[in-house]
Amino acid sequence: MPPRDTRRPDRVAEGIRMEVATFLNGDVKDPRVRGALITVTAVEVTRDLGHANVFVSIMGSDTERAATLEGLASTASYLRARVGRALQLRVAPEIAFRFDESVARAARIETLLASVRPTEPSGDDPAPGA
Image 1 (tube, rainbow, N blue to C red):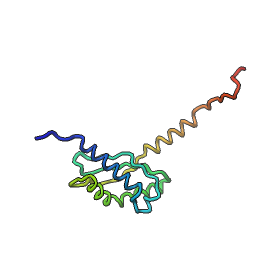
Image 2: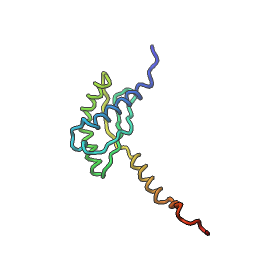
Image 3: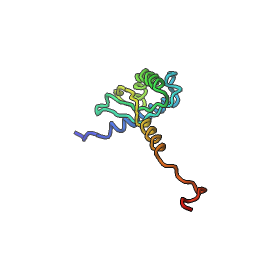
Image 4: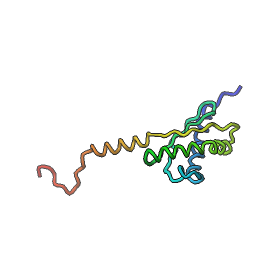
């Protein structure tokens, strides 16, 4: 019996990430999703390739994010079929979209750090005590 390919879920996850990103970049028809700025940040696939969690970062207000996630959820079955064809999988994984807060959290941390940093003196200011 040949050894199991432990990298296959990672390869399938990357293929799903690319296919979903391509779909969101131009083929999506749902108006809740079409105007939103969405980034696919990661995809996690179960070992049996039965389920895929697609993590997305969505710019906008909480209301816009919620509407966009609803739109994404409504496109999941179409995307499942599209991914199955594109990756030539016998059984395509169920796709679930999850909001990835890491990008928003990083932006908030950057904002907080910028407000705490002392302003750097410019070259035009005289040196202290001079």
